[in-house]
Length: 121
Image (tube, rainbow, N blue to C red; front, side, top):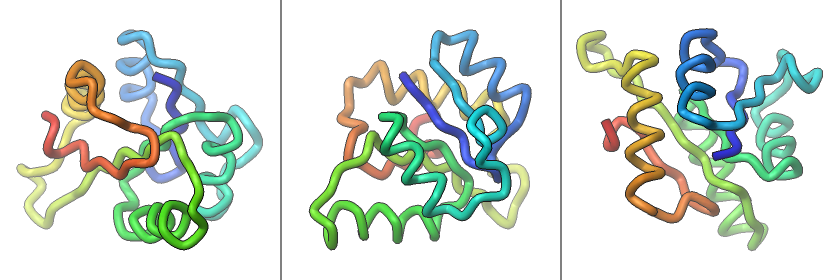
């Protein structure tokens, strides 16, 4: 899968695990987008035909709705990691990589969809 990981989710261990699993992973530093807004990150992912992986659930849920519903548009998918007030419920980088594998193996449509990876551990 072609993935773009936004600023708030860049983690060297996660990137290494995803690449080990054969994913084409891109981060903001690769394309001069460090510190850019969520809209800029999503626009880049759309232009480069990459699913976007983020921990920023609320903003990207709204952006997904805007692109799909209001603009009648298309994106390659938004994969979100939700964090809980209880750290024991939070996903490790290994959990995230496994969830991406499970989602991909399930042959679920990713394009134009908003997936919470927590459900795919």
